[in-house]
Image (cartoon, rainbow, N blue to C red; front, side, top):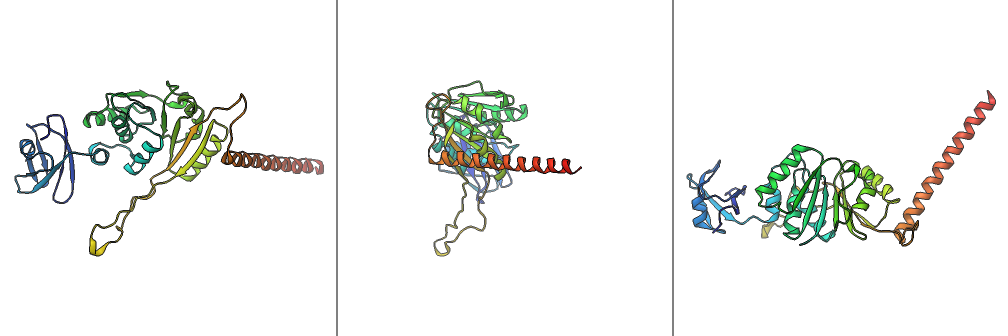
Length: 299
C-alpha cells in the first residue's frame, strides 16, 4: 500500500490520469465521483478503488513518464518524454552526475534530471523569469524531488557559475550567443545539448559552433507514431507526436595545442564551408566597392 507522502496515480475508466500525493485523510474529486484516499490505501498499488458514483479507478505507482506528462503544472511548453529520454542517454546523465540546465521553463526536464542524478548528483538550473522559477520548485516538491537541485535566477548571457559540469542542456532563444559560455561551464570532453525549435536557429547555432571548442556535432529530431493495439486491425494512430524541436548535441573539445583546434572529417568540412562563405562575402564586397568606384568616376 502507498505510504503518506508517496505519489499515486489513478486511472479512470476513460483513461484519464490523476497524479496525487497520498494523504489517507484526503479525497479525489473528479467528474466521475469522489474517491476516499483511505480506499486507495486499502486497495494498494495495482488495485481498484470505487467512487461514490460506482466508477472503478485503477491505482498505480507513477513512472517518470507519468510525472512529466500528468504530474507537473505547466505555464510553458515542456520537453516531451521522447526528447528527455534521448537527452539523458546521449549526455550520459546518471547517478552522481553534475548537470547544468538553462532555462528551466516549467520544470519537466528538471524533474527528470533530479530523479536520474540521485542523492549524490547535482542539478544547477537557470531561469530568468521568477514566476517560472517558483513553478519549477513547486513541481519538484509535488513530485517528491528537488533536494539535489540548485536554482539560479537571471540571464545566462553573462555565463554560468559552474566550470566543471559533467553535462549541460541549453534551451534559450539565441543559443548561438551562448556557445562560449557553454564551453566554459563544462569539463573538457563533456557532452552538451542545445534545443532549437526552427531551422534558421539551428543554422545560426551551427555557424557559431564552428568557432567554438566543439566537435562530434549531431542534429536530430525525434518523432513518435503510435499504433492501435488491436490485433485484427493493427494500424497507425491517426495522430502522432511529430516535430517539437531540434536537438543539437556536441562535445566540448579543447585544442590540442594553443591556437590549434582538433578537427576531424566533419570539422574540416565545416571549416572549408566557413572559408568559402567568407570568400564569397569578400568577393561580393569587392564587387560592390568596384561598382561604386566606377559610378563615382562617371560622375
